Length: 190
Image 1 (cartoon, rainbow, N blue to C red):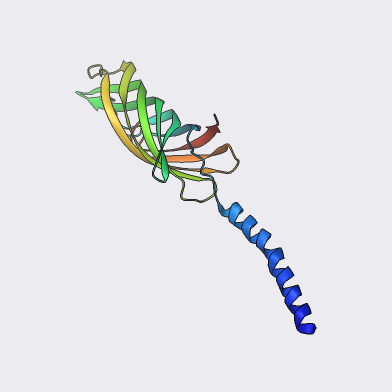
Image 2 (tube, rainbow, N blue to C red):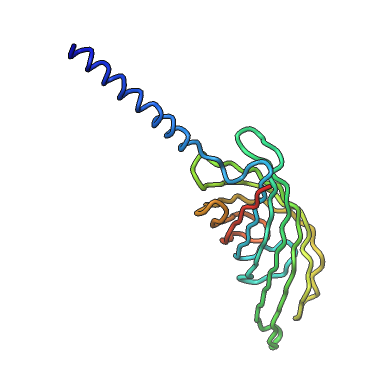
């Protein structure tokens, strides 16, 4: 009788753990931040690249980008989007016993495509991508000839970490509008 009672108690305890085990499995299944139909908006700041600019030293740049998840490709999502950037450079130098200050400002408009992979870690999104577009000079002063429109491309890798379901921090590294940038990212759902 004691053995039967022990067996029933053991069976009841085992059955009571089954729902909690399946609940744990559901909690560990992480939905990545980028899914088909999701749009990510990110904005960041960093040193500008020299696509079409005439720069000396540090040139600050600001970039805003949007990626729309269109296709599931293997374990990740392929996106299409666009980016907009602004950069400025100022350089003081002496030439032929005269002082010159070069100032240059441009805007960049480009298309971009990225591949996002979430690594099954809650809130983490990593990606790599390419961009193609034009850098348009909007202001130049100084000794040298005015720079002209420049068509160029870029490549980059990035990572975002979401501390809320829709808001997070973002960083990108590569040769794009910036060499490296840090900023914020926001998720728009379908």
